[in-house]
Length: 534
Image 1 (cartoon, one colour):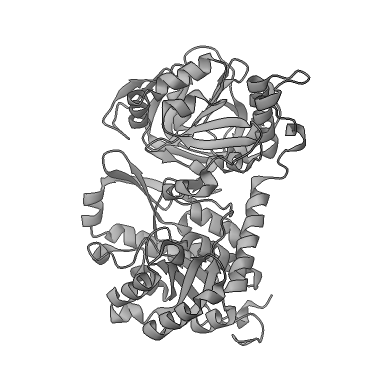
Image 2 (cartoon, rainbow, N blue to C red; image 1 turned 60 degrees about the vertical axis):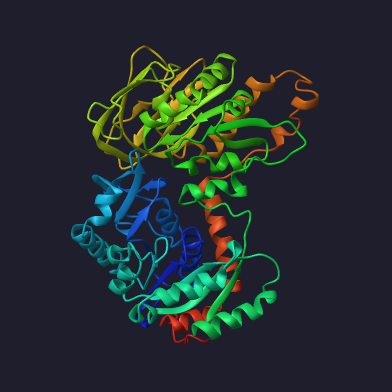
């Protein structure tokens, strides 16, 4: 491959608002450019998200940038997302810089800060990722024209200027107000900023795009910019989501079915973190999975899951206040499967202690008492990719995932561990992890991504199904019948399924965007001797 013929250029996608689809379009563009033979890397200067990922080097970044790295067919690094803000209780956020916890700040102090130290980290990281790339695909954050915050905004046009990037404006037609959103954003930009904007991407159009021909003409006439594409709404796309706004999407609603399926209730904690752990459950055709917030929803569940939390003690207090803690204990006593991940795992124990006030002003609380554990907070965050195998009923099934937590959990009485794992870097010995009682009916783990293993996912659901419906001939007649279960299992890894979804979205992007025009306006040359228009 002759990279010497490539004109180095960078492209940035900014949006008219949050959740207009920038992350997904950046993912698609990364794959399209990669498939065109370019060396591509993603970059987002500052991200605010509780969905994070751990890099192979043990650093923490936004999950969206990890997904975009996969789209570029490259390994994610901390330099692809140098500043990550993780909101927690008390209107404060944990600030992660180049993958390591830097500080905890209130929103007021963070936005009042001149960010000189953070900006240096951003510039340094950009230089690292761009050194060996033909193209850096940058993602903005929120809107670039939040006028009360604009002077200290490091994620949008300040980053675009640093990278000398051509900017494409993304507007979500599905939410309405497309003309006001696009033209208003452009009007509020400075002349210097507007000169960087090279085109508009109209996202999430439902129906026949030819019906928006007049809309394209109006946008082009009034903005003076080309509309590079009208990208259709893709309702069933299964890519990792960036923030909790996405939990209201149809994707995270229980599927309608005539058969009585296994009912899985995932408690929607106020500080819910890494909810992408449960995407495989929502995709499984014989599991009816929902995020829940009230006792009635828990009371009817065959499986109750407590997810990760960015503020375990605050969310534990919330469980008690809403009566959900008692409802979970009642489901456990009634024989339902109860499973906890990370913060949820900690809550299942007997006590959670945060003497230093790392995440909360609450220094100690009783847990749900379903596992013989005590968790105490540390000031050091553990971020590591691990692999291993399940123990107990599912002994020997392969597992892989990652840990992101500041709590240290110890057993106060004997119980089986959940898994046998090791650090994928080989820096730690093999060790037992998690806890399990009653033959695995109540268990917990620190492993995010535990359901990404198809073998473990199928075994977990089959075991939960046996507990809920029995195993005898003709069991579960009528409402409880699950006749097709044995023929409906997941195959392949979640990584393979995500890669297929990236390819699918990339194909949608390529078919609906004028790629020749995009290459031209962004000043990017194709490999070989092709001109941008060929």
